[in-house]
Length: 206
Image 1 (cartoon, rainbow, N blue to C red):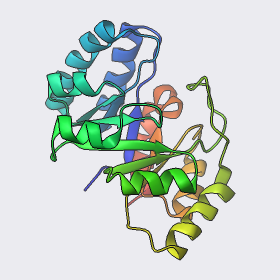
Image 2: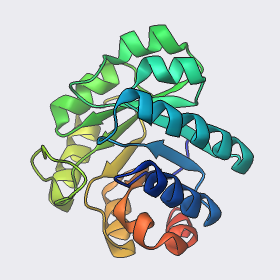
Image 3: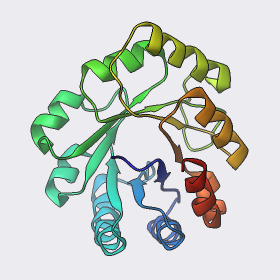
């Protein structure tokens, strides 16, 4: 059973990243995805090793964005892969069956691809405009999620947990997204700025 709320880390520096993740964990986050696009792999590895240890202390999942070989080396809980990153099958071969492997999707076709690749969950978005990604895919909005879920049901596609991602800026956004059929949400800025909202966000899925 996957957590319904993922925190995607934010911060330009290692100190900012670590501070934001610690605040999220203190506030009750149980799933951390380390995403630090400004860092090189060596710098990222230092942060990831520290965060993995902290996540273990809090009993939280630690997921790495992109770096599959580093995920293997550090033995973290899993990876999240973009559409242009390492393939799901290659990551699965390297990491083994027990690790969590998630994949990004922006369209119904991407969702079908991710399901065929046997990923453990899909991050579908972006919901709205977000400043955390430089190359932004077309925005889905609520209507985009509704249409994709309608097609998933119509085509009788296998059930894979789908998380809304990208530009989720309020609890109200999350309430609306839950109504479209998403399994959970992956949130960055909202939790970075207001980590105290974590418990109320979790309650929305209760």
